[in-house]
Amino acid sequence: MNKKTKENLEILVKMQVFEDEITKLNQKKKELPEKLSGLKSNLEEAEKEMSAAKKKLEENIKSQKSNELKIGSHKDTITKYSEQLTSIKTNKEYKALNSEINHLKEKNQKIDEETVKLMEKENNLKEVLTEAESKFEKAEKELQENESKIEEEIKVTDQEISGFKEKRNALAINLPKNIIYKYRRLIERHFDRRALAYNKKNACSGCGNAMTPQNQIDVSQSKIIQCESCGRIFIPTSLEESQQQ
Image 1 (cartoon, helix red, strand yellow):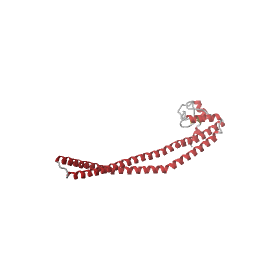
Image 2 (cartoon, rainbow, N blue to C red):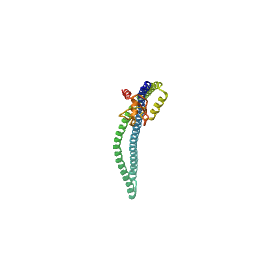
Image 3 (cartoon, rainbow, N blue to C red):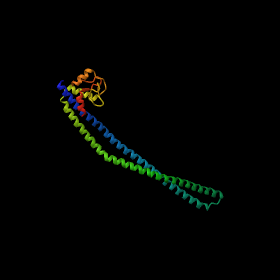
Image 4 (spheres, rainbow, N blue to C red):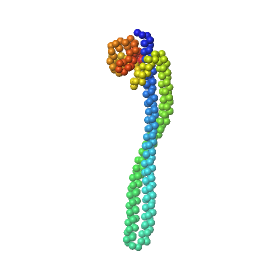
């Protein structure tokens, strides 16, 4: 067994441990802004709902006021026409004017009925608005409470990533350049950013490809052997166990 080769494998195992931590932290760093974005989206959505509820209530009240003005205008006209009735000389003119008065009274009655419906709807719209305002306040509070925390967490995560990178790089300077190159290529190549694998029931733990008997022997003797399929560097079972501890 080549002592130097075993030392190199031990270094790679330690580097992979740091790499795994970096991978976890990078995933966390990706999720944190998404979480913050979700809180902001919730607030925007709550604000839209609140604005829509306010608009509907305002339109309802505006319609009620418009109806009041219409009724007032009709009443003024009815009063005016009623006064004119006393001075009308022909029966035909009297009937025509009286018919117009009755028509205006009917219109006012319909407007009154419409106003009652609007008033009933107003109560419902007020409840909807109250609920929307409560939802907005909750979303706003949640964002205020978490925004600075998440931003601080992102900052801390960046610092932790830098720390693990420094530790990994400090180990890498003890390796031959060709091994460092292989390690980096494998890290970049695989989605799980794992450059190492072990003998798992006579197959590569990374991709499941069967190991040749000779490769199994070489790996057990701490020789640097790569998987013929995924290219990951095999580590002896003893080192794999230490990696999991």
